[in-house]
Length: 372
Image (cartoon, rainbow, N blue to C red; front, side, top):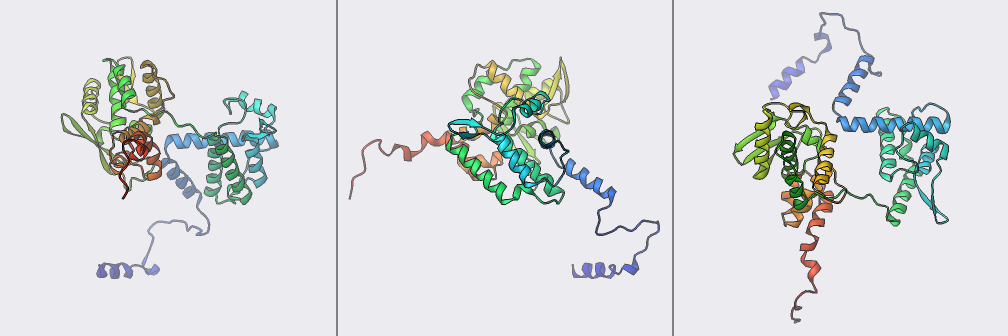
């Protein structure tokens, strides 16, 4: 090792380096224009399509709102008063017993009419906070003074969060798809090509640890290994919580009925390489599904099964974790499959399922212990 370092050190004399072709010298204080394009390409390549789409939508809204509010084109850095105005324009508050906000009705109507808003009135708090987060990241990437980190802005955001919590206006999670409703949905999957695919997709996503929709549609044959007739192992290369794949190289088991359903789909579709779950056009197995298709499949199958509740793709993940708690699966084992990195996040679902099994809730049941 020392010899290698010594040899490497001998080659560090600039005078020993020569160029056989003419290459222009770069300014070390300024990023070259071509390098700027390369940096942007790398940033975009490492970003999921869903994230890129959400960021672009948020910035489009900022530009539209800013133009209507200030009659000017949005440019970075955005002044702090603009961010404060955005918050009071979009966050509902209670004034004299009535809910109100500061966005003029004419501007609200214009934003809805142009398609920048879905409905009139203040959006959900999660939407407001997401747009603030996107604007913050835009400033960070441009190395511009960040108005979102301003003391006034941060204090207002904390106050808004507290007010919403006190009013009970907390985000409502999608309904968990636990074992019973999942089995009801599977029963409505027929033996046609779409039914076989949907059954395999739902079981693959649920039984392997509640895979996210992006993970389901990114699943490829090259990372799937058949162990025997009742078991597959799927190697998850990366996820939302591990986008670089640094710690996610772990096989996720697909066993029992989930493995049987997956085998049936692969045989019916004839898929041997590339994306596992694909669109079906008539009787033709076509291109890979988009992540939003997983949400549509969950909703359609829930409707066919006559299930009440607001189900989405995330219901598969929360349902797996809730069922694990209900069946007293150790939290560490459940998290090993889901890939949760935050115990706090995992417990939110796990404890929901386990709450009726906790011994602490039954202290008044049965005879009290004898006092000594």
